[in-house]
Image 1 (cartoon, helix red, strand yellow):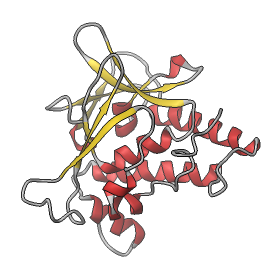
Image 2 (image 1 turned 45 degrees about the horizontal axis):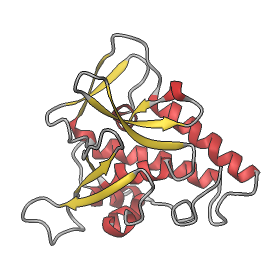
Image 3 (image 1 turned 180 degrees about the vertical axis):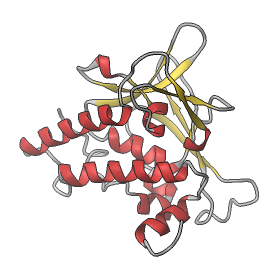
Image 4 (image 1 turned 90 degrees about the horizontal axis):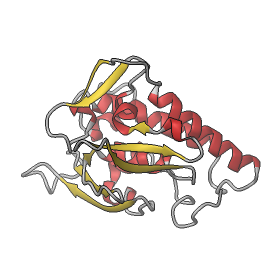
Length: 217
């Protein structure tokens, strides 16, 4: 479980860091990410603090895709894949549909759709994109009843992230500025704020309300 000094040792991508400067927070890329482009709402390109950009990611190997996400989602993807053992991949069902999933090394049975993780889908719930299939921002994901039993997506990926981080810590290979607890706390916080973002709130307002609980968001 060797870590990459150029990526794994970076400071945590917290919600505050992402809100203050999405371009800087997302500048260093993990190996699975081929390209990253930020696009602000038309007419608001100069108001980066107030409006949340759409982040287009270029990813995949055999199936190269360019889906759109929010900065908070991308920060979560980068953090959940910070250490070797979890990666973002694309695959196809063979009938023209493609998916973005989190792949767990040595646990292929836990290959998990990022739509399910983003939306917090549980055992008998499915998550689908409503509208443009490449726009995977949380506000465009809808839950529906699943035809068969699945897994609690967040429980699966957070469980593996915790296992990997605690193993690194126990072996003395965790970056010196991090602890497994701080790493996992940030992942959970990012997911919590992604849920708030799914209601249509801007990133700046979400973070302001989170850091200042007396402010309504």
